[in-house]
Image 1 (cartoon, rainbow, N blue to C red):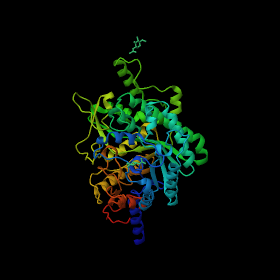
Image 2: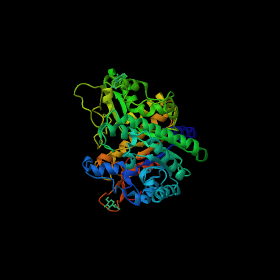
Image 3: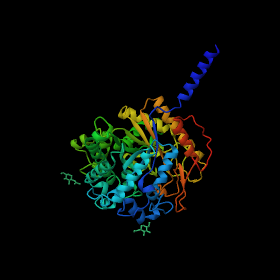
Image 4: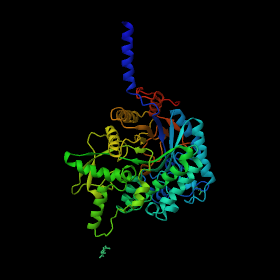
Length: 499
Ligand SMILES: *[C@@H]1O[C@H](CO)[C@@H](O)[C@H](O)[C@H]1NC(C)=O
Ligand SMILES: *[C@@H]1O[C@H](CO)[C@@H](O)[C@H](O)[C@H]1NC(C)=O
């Protein structure tokens, strides 16, 4: 009798505990990007990128008039970054290669020895500690020499990128098994060209943004096909791109249709050509832009069409869906006087919508960031519904604060709330989520927010020439989740220098 009782209790305990476990094989990591951490913008033969040029020309556009010249000095302090990845127990570390560090001329016929060595050393050190390197080829830092020829608005950029990708696969593909071609084209195309705030600082709304969009998708597809044909047979890795998506929710019942259209505009433009069965632009958007262009007296749509050959080139060029999630918006048809605000408001003028937030969504420490954890789960379900039962890898998620202190309970809450939604998505909704990436490993140069908004699991002292890194409470929390492979961990974490 007693024995039976014990068994029953232990079974029920097992179920409760088990429901907060992540599936076996689920991977945890953290991410960074070259311009945001490396510094050493002008060492050896590295050439300037569009971010070097843009911020040197317009320091006033960054909140604290700072730049990435030194940043976290990870070009020199990378061994400490690897140690941090090990302290956290990361399964993988996602970092990006600076194109202009590896190929200073932009083109593939000259490889920098120093650049090649830097990434070789980093990859080898990670593997030595049992951490998988996950490499992004493009995290916004185009070589300025290619920008001078039009950058992402020049159709030839897709070949320049494909050549660069082949060099990276040849040099590192034996050890790097997961690749991201492009990070968040919606940011360096839509937001960049619709506002001129982000590099390259060119204002060309509804023109430059669409050219950049199309050429990015073709560049991604060419790199994917090169990997698929020349490298996959020997290295057997995976490759895709990472899209940032804000969950969009109708403001009222009357806004359901316009919300669907807005999703196609902000998500579909970077996903439909690759992940849908039919490929090409989302038909509803193609139609809207064609009609608007006609009304504007143009004989050609501002949205450059895909040829049938291009549609076939691009369609199906993925091994998983890379999904960056931070924030959500509500969608309503725009009325007179509605402001176009910071992204993801920006760029929605072509479809005439007003994006705002619910009053109960708390804001984080940057003007675009409102917190809605359920948005992550809803977006995962939407992706499954629209693109099928594909593997989804969360390539970024994290929290911004202005407080640079170590006791970051707000960040712990953000991670807890979002990881709960990931678990629900896997267990209740049957979405194939296979990995989660915290943004970010260490405080870094956060683009137009400079060093003011902090995303790091580790604090970086930017006053210290050594750029000392110290774990925050959230680092302890994340490490314990990884260690137990479960959300059943103590949220009351103590801070200490040692992790
Ligand atoms: C590199 O840039 C720094 C400013 O970040 C400057 O002080 C230094 O002189 C430059 N070095 C070279 C070799 O141009
Ligand atoms: C558009 O095409 C028509 C017919 O070919 C031509 O008459 C007209 O001038 C063109 N308009 C523009 C803006 O090029």
